[in-house]
Length: 217
Image 1: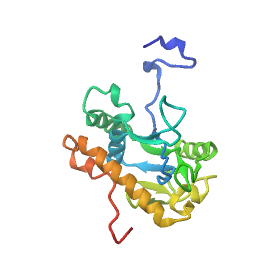
Image 2: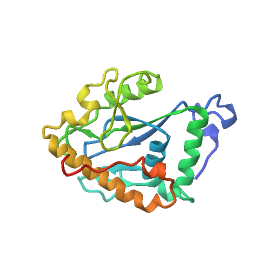
Image 3: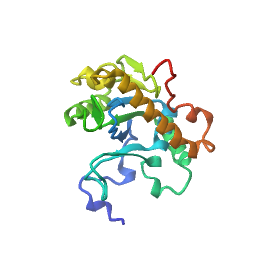
Image 4: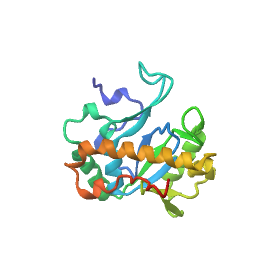
């Protein structure tokens, strides 16, 4: 369905928008409690995660779901509505990011300190603080760490956000369990991406996660 723009309060017609977005936000909900709450993505990581479209289905958001959340991947965060191969849309996004110098962020509103049922939901207050910091450029000149499995950049600090939220492994009581759970999530990403890999360039495939070695587990 569609309706006139003037039905939407404060909406501006496309020709009236003065600038392109400076920040692109991918929202996900990680019910396994292992992803960081915010990560900065380069263009290849942005394409990989856009194509993957990872999140968790939560009870109360869809009919037929039980209590336990379900991991799901929906290409471009809207697979049923995409006519072309997901890389087609990912490349359009990448070109826009490069042309206009936009920053891209993966923001996780899921769990921290443990999976669903063990940890706690990342608070709206902390999510809001991270989003505001990203949009206001307060994360631009901070120190980052490279994520061990996914390779994206995670800020070491963020105004008004605790360290154990920014670095999920510190909030888990059992570190080995954390890494096993994180490795399992990486495996799900890798398996899901196989259906798209043959039509994606090597640099996008390489932007996906790696698995832990036996010595690391």
